[in-house]
Length: 322
Image (cartoon, rainbow, N blue to C red; front, side, top):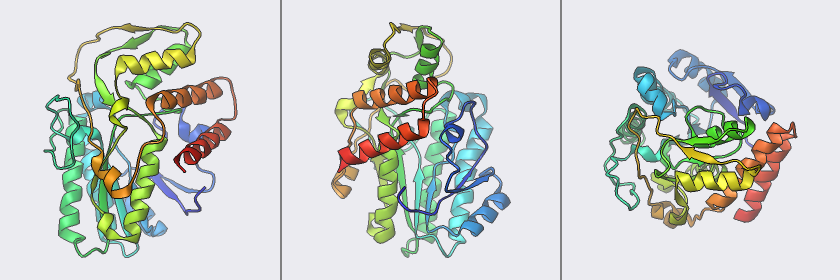
């Protein structure tokens, strides 16, 4: 929609159904199915595309899955990052690189104020730790190979995203949608855990902003937290209650501890830096984010035009932003 020539490189669809398929995402882009751990395949696709801007979002992104498959998680999140940075290092076309990591890269002390970009990195679980490692890999490449300003390199540490089309396991909104469709109670594992929830369009627009700004001027290359205002750092129970409100039909949630793995209880970001540098502010609060998520989910459930729904939500977001 912005007029970019886009090449995407990714594994095949990770879920069934899949937003990639539902939204006809291949229309108008060059889609390459490949594994970021496969350097030869990645380099071939990279050299063919000759990109000027590289957005690195490939990951094994699920905490609970990282306990089941730690090696795969590290191979994807750490060596995958090494591979894409090697492609950037060997390229003469790239001017702007952004690695999207997570708010979970920080050593979590469970305190009530937000983590700043200069706080220590040290994720607890294999997923969080692997993303901390990906940050350090990016820092090393930036210092070792790109200090001359030939490539502007940044990382963005985003909070928890929600939105229509997420069908992953062990995520609260997909669990809510599945329960609602099946007319079952929503099972909430950690109702009192606090997270910086935001609609997925919010950080995606920020990633494009960072990539564009540092493309124009490498002084903007840095490390940025991307999250909602403090007022939208909610407990899971409050998020689920909003979902029940907008879904309706008498749906309700139940607290059920399924035991097992460690997950952080309190996590919050300080986003003062990106607000100051770019004069940026979030557009949609959590209630709007949940409302839009339910709108998309019901459109899909009822066989509606999902792509039109997504385009409409993008236009609404951009109109609100302007």
